[in-house]
Image 1 (cartoon, one colour):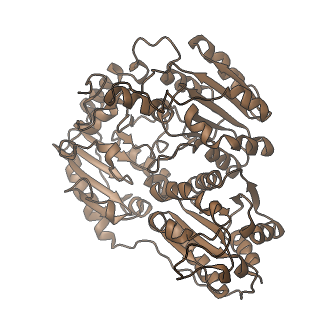
Image 2 (cartoon, helix red, strand yellow):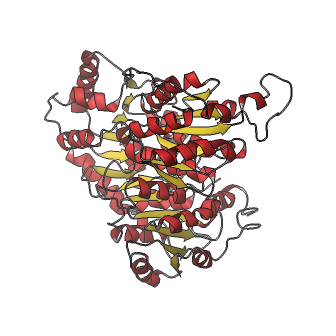
Length: 568
C-alpha cells in the first residue's frame, strides 16, 4: 500500500469522518488518496488558518483529533495559530503538512533553502505541540501515526504535527499489526479516597464553599459525572471561559463566569469563598488577577488537574491531585456525605447578583446594550447546537450574558486569544455535527480576519447564523487606550475601518440585515432565524464607546472591578 493510501485508511479506521484542508502541491497525493478512500468528508477552506480552527472545533466537540492538512511553506506556517489554539486549550488534533522531496531539503547545509517552499515547520511547531515529527522513511509511518493519535488524545489532550515529504507519500509501506498501549494515568484508589475524604472534612467546616470548573471537565468526558456530583452536594459553581458550557444557564448551582471581565457577583464569590475546589482549570492570570496573595487569602484550595505542571504553579500551597477527571469521579462516586451548601452563602451570592446584573453594568446607554442583546439572542436561538465567539469585546459580552441550554456548546479561543476564530470554528462545528445550525458571534475587527470563509459557508450551504457586534473599532484595545493612553486611538479607531458587512454578505449570496437601535433587536433576530436551514448575517451596530464592564483593575483583587474602581 502506498503511504498516502495508508494514511487515508488509517484516519478512516480511527473513525475520523472529516478533514479540513487547503489544497497545495505537496499534499495533492494525500488529498487524492482521501478522495479515493471515500467515507471521509474533505472540507476545502480558503485559508489554512481557517482549516486549523475548523479542525480545532471538531476536536473540542468529539474529543477525537481534528485533522487539518496544508502544503509546505506558507501553507504549513499558516496553520500555526490554529495549532497554538489547540495546544493552549487542550484540544486533540493532528496537523499533516506536505514537505518537499528529501533530496530537495537542505539538511545541515549552512544555506536557507534548496526546494521551493522548503520550510522547517517542525522546529517552528515544536513549542506549541505535544510532539512534532519530520518523516524521513516510509517504514516510520505506521508507528508514528499510531503514536501521534494516542499522544493527541491521552493525558492532557493537544496537537501533534507530522511533516511528510512528497516523495515518501508515494512510496510503499507494509501494514503492521500495532498494539495500542493505554497511556492513561493510573493511581492507587486510596489516593483518590484520601484526597476526597480530606476535602469532605474541609467541606463540613466550610461556610462559603465554591467550585471552579474549566475545560478539563469536557475534555475528560466528565460532564454527566460532574452534574451528578453537583446534584449530590449542591455547591455553588463558577466557570472559567473554557468551562463556560459545563453548566446550563438555568442550572441551580451555576453562579456565573469569573475572571478579568467576569460577572461581578461570580468574582465576588470566587474572592470571598473559604473553600475552593478547582476541577480541570489552570488558575491563570485572567482567572485570579495578578494579586495572587489576595486571591489565596482566607481560603483553602483543592485542585484536581491532569497536568502536573499546572498544580501549585501560580497559586501555591494548594492540596492537589494529579489525575484525569473521569477517573476522579469514577473513584469518588460512592463516597457518601449528606452535605449541602449553607443557605446563607447561597443567598448572599444571589443578592450580589441582583444588585449588579450584567444588563445594568453599562449605564446611560442609548444605543444597543450588548448584554441585553446577547440575552435576547440566546432566548431565540434554541435551535443552535453551538455558539462560537471570536476574541475581543464580543467574547466577553457572550461570556457574561449567554444563556446556554444543557445541550448547547460554547467554543472560543482561550489561551491563544486568536481573533478570526469564530467563523471557521462555526464551520467546523456545523459540519462535525451534521450541518446543524450554529450561531457565530464576532466583532467587526475579528470577523474580517477570516471573512473569506463566507464562501465555505455558501458552498456547503451551512445554516450558520452570523452575528457581528459592530462597534466600529477594535473595542477592547480602544477601552484600554481610554484607561492608560489618554484616549489616543491609534490603530483602533484612527487608521481602522470596516466595510458594509451586508454588502459583503450579498457578494457571497448570503441574506443579511443590519440594526442600530434597541427597538430593532426583535426584528433583526426574527430575520436571523426566519429560515433555520439557511445562513444569515446580522450586523448589530453598537456605539463606538461602549465598554465591557465589569473589568478587574490591573493589580487589584478580583472583587475590585471597574467602573466602581477607576484607573489611576
